[in-house]
Length: 179
Image (cartoon, rainbow, N blue to C red; front, side):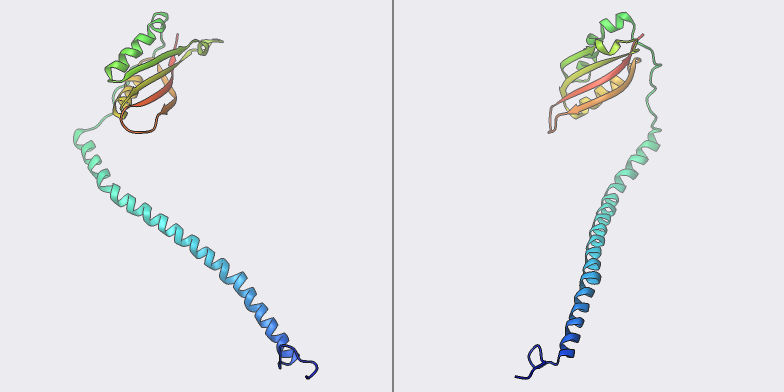
């Protein structure tokens, strides 16, 4: 055996150059190609998401145009909201009956209508009311529209809707102005 050789019959300088070259090649792959490959995968994902949004908008555009034509043809206008006024003492005492009538009128089942008297404490001018109804989405939507038409209506704090189809339970918390 000859002394001063490594990697079989390769001279030491050639073996060193081979190791350095292999190291540079690995470094180039790790620092150049792998990050670029990851960036290309991210861009592909973004392109797929953008393509999906474009397709979605393309599918919805005819519906939008149709709705726009209907709105222009009928001269669609928002309903006139009543002038805001607070609930008087008598109206507060009859509030549960009034809301129950609105609920039945819109075709929903009354579960509970509970005014929160604690919300009137400390000089507050607003009364919170918790409403629990049961019915279809269309009827719940109609009921919310009727609530907005109340002269004392201020805002809707929360709406919890049971998932599913058909008749659903809906819990609503609204605020009404009080005198």
